[in-house]
View 1 (tube, rainbow, N blue to C red):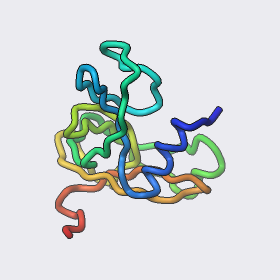
View 2 (cartoon, helix red, strand yellow):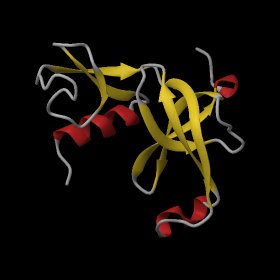
View 3 (cartoon, rainbow, N blue to C red):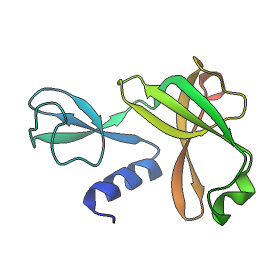
Length: 127
């Protein structure tokens, strides 16, 4: 099921940003797709864009595609990243990433979906 909250997240990724929600009542920042603050239950939520940088907390290599659309990517790396804003999320990762590495998120299109890939900060483009 998709809705307005999914659209905000997907549109953000297409723009190259990770949308997060910030509670106007208590300031808690949370990963999207919520109608109420996880901490105080306020509905006063605003969207903010994450910086997109963070630190790798876990790494795994996928050798078996979950469906046919991912078969061409196998083997691929999945990472759990703690964003600088404090939230953790999973995404694709550059090969060779290790726990503790500093990374930045970059969007990529795959099978009519916009997904995240984390690459080392040292390989990120600087404006």
